[in-house]
Image (cartoon, rainbow, N blue to C red; front, side, top):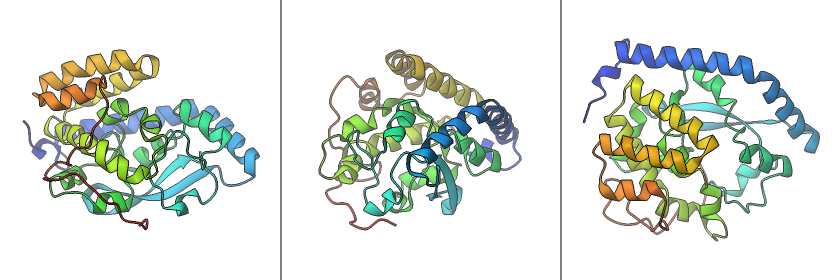
Length: 261
């Protein structure tokens, strides 16, 4: 297990990570700008509303930042109070379903990476109400910038299918997904390095071509980190997900706040 000490401000490891973030984000925005413009135009033509969704998310250190996404839902969908999106969520638009399927909705977050709000690799940014539910152990994730991708992005790439048909997707997410996402993120914190980031970026790219292959290769990384067998078994995604306590908690979450923050 490693500490976050090598990633303090201006350390060589932090400099390399930030340099990788800036270079990849700048190049990505340059190359992908035509695709982003086409996607944005398709969203605007569907309902003549803003094609981008800008919303507050929890940042490093517990502050907030404004995260940018391509809008895949109806206007003001966030006011419904449902924070986890199931595959059959009626708030998702026709164009939005295609954008989500092609994993295009998160591409504008390269701008957040360029600004320094996010990193290429790190725990996915959480809405404020979700972060308020963190256990003291989970709050360790706020020690670093949130990321565009992480191991959980691959393991739970089918999140919409997992939550499909649920009467309370927020609660189901916190019972069967969040506990494992947090454990994967905490493992990443304990083994952060530029090489680790490159391995996760490679796995993310591989998952776009073959998620089963990416999950198999992920097992090697988890074994290198000495991950608990329960985490490795979950990451194989060969069995149904069951309710589990979040890291640092003794019990499974049984209720979820009714109003969004």
